[in-house]
Length: 343
Image (cartoon, rainbow, N blue to C red; front, side, top):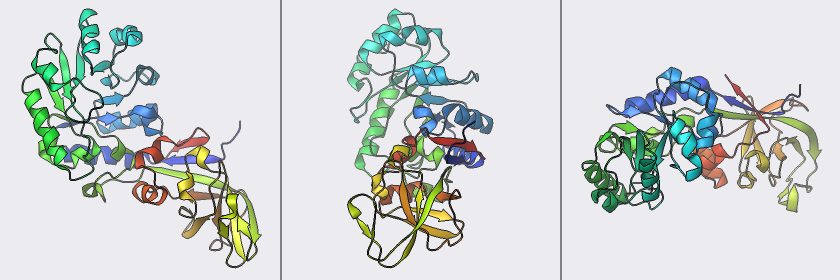
């Protein structure tokens, strides 16, 4: 059996604690979990199992294929992309519910005699969702709606649009018969009780992302990549490292080449900005990140040798600031060459 040279150390306790923290912040509202994009890159089946044990009772995926990939676990799953004609057989067979977001989807679901569903209302993001005017005109009449929802466009900012969306959603929800109302994502949970309604739908924060300052110190890191040293070498003063010779050694420098790169989701934005760790020794990234190799200065780790592992710093807020990528991109771009190990 081949041993993967890259590892993602995934902290199950931190994942569960993050959900519990968001559940507490949700107050009287139920706290669900977005597990789309294969659990934000961690492995949806493993994430769902751990969050269900922690107490989560509602999950969200993007597509019907994602829903089918989840093992049976007896808890509600909603499919955010709604229901195309090609999805009807799977949707009618259950147990997942569609989140209807267009008049065509609503008509399709009604014509098929579909059962309980969720509905997305657009309150200004202009992404997915039926229009408020369509709702007022009776588009949703006859549906059995479990959750009426909308999505905040600027919840990670103190933007006036947050309140406008919240007020419009409350007005529309007042005209619809639904079991639950849901507006807040991870950042929305931190906006306050006015945004939580009956059900919150965090995603990023479950996995260690911090979309608003109020969540700093509350949310714990979950993902810890580890790479191996493929080669250690001494680069003489004046020599360069990597593509386009962007880094020049100011003095004789001990350098390690690691088996990780942008094909693994460690992006070129980390060139001369990222860092790894060997115990307490900080190892700065030097030169350009390439497809599957990166160089680090290991002068602070004199005992580090070929084949040993180092921890790649992926503290999400800091890594996003360093790389220019969003916290979402950093998580969901983690590739398939990692051995995902839950600890």
